[in-house]
Image 1: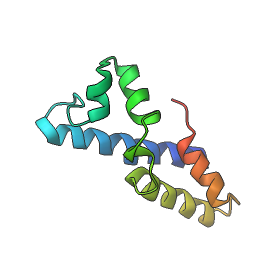
Image 2: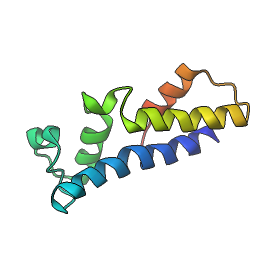
Image 3: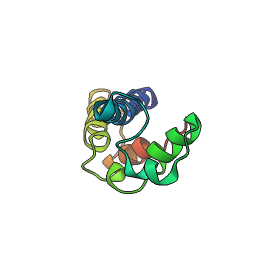
Image 4: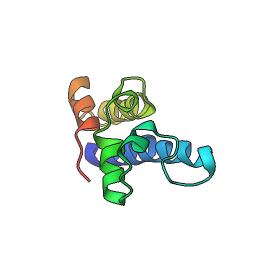
Length: 100
């Protein structure tokens, strides 16, 4: 159950947010708002996804990013409600260590 909730959190708070920031920039999904993307200039869909969202250092992997704050809250809530027994550290690790 926690893995399904983690996937929903991942899609909602990581990808949707990043895509919405990009669309807001120039009404195109081209990562023009992202200095990391501008640096690597790799436009293949799989490279964009992995480089921009999974392996990017900096603001994305901070404890204040929406994915970290809201995603962790969602996992903690499900953990408590269903008495799954995960520690906060375990939930944090689940949040960040994922595969597509």
